[in-house]
Structure formats: structure tokens, C-alpha cells
Amino acid sequence: MNNVCCFSSFCADLQGMMFSVMNGGNVRFHSDNPSNFTGLTVCLRVLTEQTFSIQLNFINQTHFVRLDDNVLYVNGCSVSFYPFFMVPVYQEHWPWKNRCLTWESSTGMAQLWSDGKMSVRKGIMFSVMNGGNVFSSLDELPFYDFRGQLSDVHVWDRVLNSNDLNWFLSYNYNFPSGNILDWKRIEYSTSGYTVLEPIFDNCLTRFNKVVQPGPLGTQCN
Image: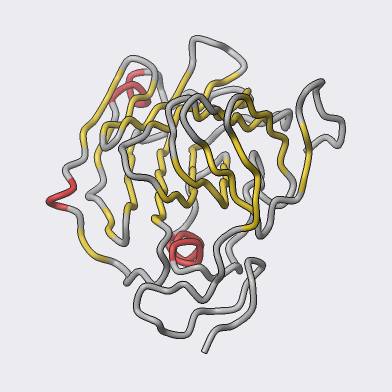
């Protein structure tokens, strides 16, 4: 990622930090890393009392990927994922909610991970009808309607394998950093009531069990 930030934006290592976004606040993450996407993986951690959307805007403004609660849109095509049919794949140990989405351009296959559960894989016909054409460079990942805490935002231009996804979801920081957006070196801009502050203590685990040591703190007993 380029070291030069745009005016009114900041570049920073946000390990151990989170954004608290209140009413009237917005945060946007920017990328100037050129890439041809063979797929897409987006992962992040949130604490929120409401549903929220994730939208990736590409340099070509006619292209976008949007996750609206449990409905994934790729340009004008969409597919719905039903949370009642999601399969448990790991046990949560933190108060944070993990969310990941993957989408493969050549086949159109997409999948969601949310709150310790994995969805079935579903296809979005846009990818197949367009011969698996890839998107051009990502422009930004804005959070306009989000209210709550947000941390560990990563974006990749490919589908991560199951081991890498499991590392992220289980708070094992051996997962590869995002090559499009990387929380350890990310450009962002904020407006309104948005606070950048230290993340909650690692030891706030849901079941009061040992968690793996990582950039967000030390091992808890």
C-alpha cells in the first residue's frame, strides 16, 4: 500500500485499536493498491446492537459488492443466506462478533461466516454470466450506517483458504494480512461522532477461558 495518504485521510497501524462510531459518525477505509480481483474476502470484527451493511466500491463506480445483513449483492445480482441454516464451526471466546464473506469470480460461489457459524455456499449468476470477469482496483470500504465498535478490518483480492479463515475467526494472528486493506497499515477517514480508541481488554472472554496471545494483548489466565 502506498505510504502517501490523501488529504484529510490518515495512514496508521491500528493494531490494538478500534473505532467507536456513534449517531452521525462515519468511517471509511481507502485503498490505492492496484489489483485485478480473482475473488474477494472481507473479514472484520464488530460490536453492535443493530444490523449493518458492508459495501466495497471499486474504481469503476458501476462496480460494487454489498453485504446487507444476510443478502450479498454483486452489482445487480444478489443471493440470500439464511442464518437458521448456518453450521457452527467454532466456539466464540470473545465479546466481539466476527464476520467474513468470500466470493469467487470464476464460479460465482459465495459464502458467509457470522458469529461462529458458516453458511452453505451459494452462487451469484453475475460472475458466471460475465465469464468470471474480475473487478478492477478497490476505491473504498465505507461504513455510513454503522453504529458500535469496529476493528480488524481486512480485505483480500482472492478467496482465503479454510485454514486462513479459521485463523482469523479463532483470533489466531497467523492469518495473512489483507493485501487490499490491512488493519496494520490502513488509510482511513472519519466524520461526525467517531472515536479511535484502544480495543477492549483481551481478557474479556465470554467463557473466561485462555485465549491465544496476539497483537491485541497478552495471554489471559
